[in-house]
Image 1 (cartoon, rainbow, N blue to C red):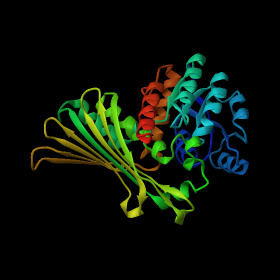
Image 2: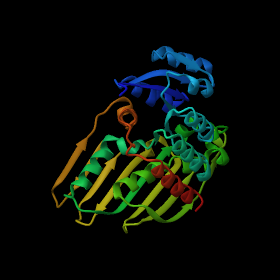
Image 3: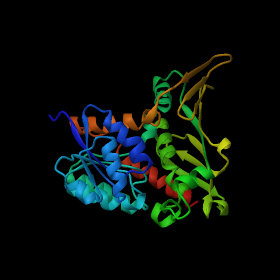
Length: 333
């Protein structure tokens, strides 16, 4: 069995350079052997900083590199399909950012190509590896707090922060390229998180939206989505997404209510609070640094181990397709 996996990363935006590059650099069984970005200077700088052997301007050159065993796709959504198809046909394993593609049909085509090639294909659903959500999963699995029957998830992102990451002319605001704008793109992870925690599929979706064009940021969108989901096990969930707030209102918060009257709260990436009968209250604080706080390092480690052990990752292509289908239903009302 090989003792390490040669990693090539395509796309050096925030996730590629700030999450995946340092993660794979710190995994003993992974070797960063190549990066690719259409910005050749950015690729060169990243290769120099992280001591990567090869820097390419095209993903084609990267997937042809014989030292690359696995390709990490962290480019805009509308570019995923072609890179994934080329990587799969070259026999490279794939870790692909979400959403897989702008449409469910294209996402299915990616999954089909990967299956035909017999490679490891893992969608990047990193909430499953985020420390505080892992703790929530452990508490549910222990059976000691009862079964979750209702969930509430809120994610508000500051409009100016979104505009800095994705200016008005960015692909992210183009519904055709992104699949439905940030309201679609950014809901994927929380949808998958709820499927994972509740161990059930989404059977009904009811959603409403109200968007505002933000001229002060050149025409970005202050999106607002309110959705109610029903799951196959009878559990229900309310989702609230907004990109129409000031930085002080930014929040990520999950609440789970159990049939035992116990409840769990996960705040940001740092905290889990368990409420039992008063005054019983437990709290866990997570002080992870770097990409561990988002779960990317743990996710990347799992990807590498799956390749080396020739086993199916715990996060599957089917998980990606189901999350993307639900996100599309939310956006489409």
